[in-house]
Amino acid sequence: MKSKVFFTRQITPESVVELYRKLDIALPGKIAVKVHTGEKGNQNYLRPEFWRPMVEEVHGTVVECNTAYGDATGGVRDNTESHRKLLEEHGWTKYFAVDLMDAEGPDVVWPIPNGKVLKENRVGKHILEYDSMLVLAHFKGHPAGGYGGALKQLSIGCASRAGKALIHSAGKTDDRFETWKQHASNVVFPEAMADAAMSVVEHFKGKIAFINVMKNLSVDCDCCAVAEDPCMKDIGVLASLDPVAIDQACIDLVVQSGDPGREHFMERVNSRNGIHTIEAAAALGYGSREYELIEC
Image (cartoon, rainbow, N blue to C red; front, side, top):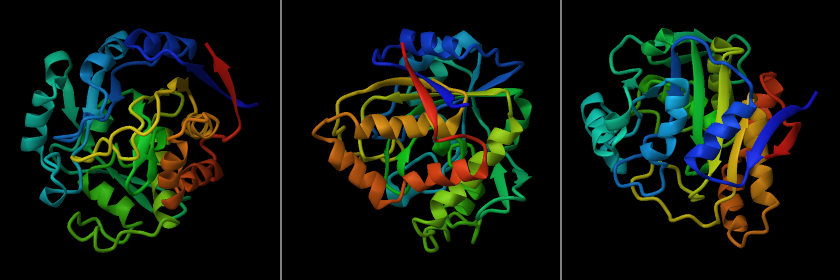
């Protein structure tokens, strides 16, 4: 059976909630709501006001993790103190309880016995405090992964600093200063992302849902302090219980759009072999590239 992906062209806080309700899932217990809170200086990230009705709908806790990069990129989210300050500056703490899951160690180490590249994933230990997860992804491009969507939120997004280093180096090092010297090729890096994402999906199996918002479609990620302006018109909002299907549907909507910025966006995706993340995730068996797009 094909995975269901619900889609609306209306991009409003209210339409996000309406689409989530189409999933007909009741996430149990304490809910971690994974978002990208935006790097200092980034203009494209989705603001807390946009996500507020959705977070309140599920009575969730916004969760994030520290990054593996530092001053060389202009980023300030690589340590807890400056990250928390930025969360306040960006307005997240005004509306939500925000949990930096790796603010204190030790990391949780999840084995990945069937991984294509990684043998383990390292995530912030606070992830164990949650019963379920709602992944709210801003779909856009990415300098290393080609694109960022649900699978990136699950992998890089949920990993601790050491976990991010492992993914970027395809398991060679957990040292965030060394990982950039040993950054993996665009074959094994997507596979490492798929491996890490699988461990999170398996942990929350049956208690996880995904929403991708195709707005502010830049070739750069919200982790970029200096990001390129969007190159395409906004497309819409998607919701699914399948992280592979929802990312594949987003890529297909870009390709099918006819937007004059499509070629530029897809050059970023293809030059980084971004679709291989989707291929690898499907091969691992925790999602399908075959889906039914249900427009609402």
